[in-house]
Image (tube, rainbow, N blue to C red; front, side, top):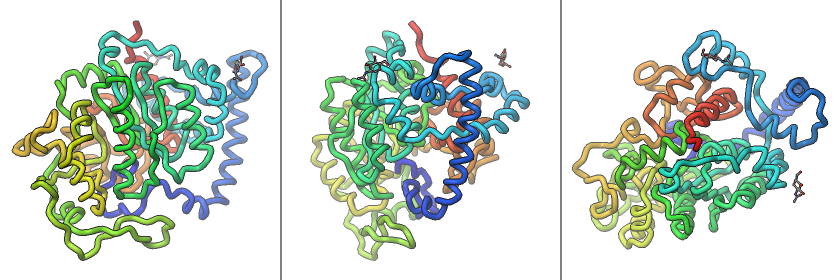
Length: 437
Ligand SMILES: *[C@@H]1O[C@H](CO)[C@@H](O)[C@H](O)[C@H]1NC(C)=O
Ligand SMILES: *[C@@H]1O[C@H](CO)[C@@H](O)[C@H](O)[C@H]1NC(C)=O
């Protein structure tokens, strides 16, 4: 599940239901918003005037100022684990929370020339090795346009191709921001079919499938496709990523493990969409009705919603009868995206297939997504320095080095409301790793 990497019991809650939360926190939210805005304006006034010594400023200057995400910290020192600088950053991040919202991105992108210049989309240079190895992305997002733009910026290369799938339920300014991004950048488009994505439901899988089928029809003959959600961020530049993907030699990279008894229940019983507790949204709930075995003798594997798939693989499954039947069979399972890809990559005959006899590809072995679980902190990895949501760490600035030195290609979760400085430093470090011709 995008943004829902937690596969444990607390899965009943989900991101996206911010309306519900907002109602309860509206008052608090408004009060803090006013406070943050005042602080922010004060801070911006000072920094803008300091840096530009009295030039006139319009809304664009203001937006580019807040959207360039540079803070008065030394990211190199943070990367080198300088305790003083990390301490400073941890202190600063409280004050650095930037109240950029979807409307700001709508304004920023309403004039494409200005947007592209402000955010330097016309200045990305790529190497020959990258040019001959285009990548495709499926971005399944539903909120936080500023973050989506930053992700896009971090993974952007002019010869790649990007599909954005926004949710039918998304708020209007968010949708407008996404449409503007697609309008301004020639290699970014909106998925031709849009789902109303429900948690743990086949609609989440369909959102990616919609993008994949559009991407297959694109004139860009991409080599690999990667799916991301609005809380992911890359840990490699396009240059580094291409170098690693070339070494895959056509294999796919994704988690694929043998399901335990608990996981098996997800596809052994018929599930039905139901309202649970006080939520306004429906999620698949298990019924006592047992399901038939998967079609065509498919052997089930479990994994995650995240993948790095070759063009050949996607092309193969797009017209395959077994896959079509399997998708139909999966419709009433729980969180089908977490077994669909994991099972198909083990199917004999698929391009880049992983034989069923081969050992589990765990989330550690698969480089697709780095997720920090609260259960393993202090054992497998250092503690989270941001905060937790449903047992998953939202990273903080002291994890910069750990994130970058990990072998993984992307990580989840990031939130500018938790630690904007970490994201800013990641952006800076990735920029250093880009290829400059
Ligand atoms: C940032 O920190 C690094 C490492 O500590 C140091 O070499 C560099 O000079 C610092 N940069 C600035 C601008 O202070
Ligand atoms: C966009 O902004 C530029 C520079 O400010 C301006 O010259 C141009 O006319 C604007 N374009 C549109 C379509 O408003």
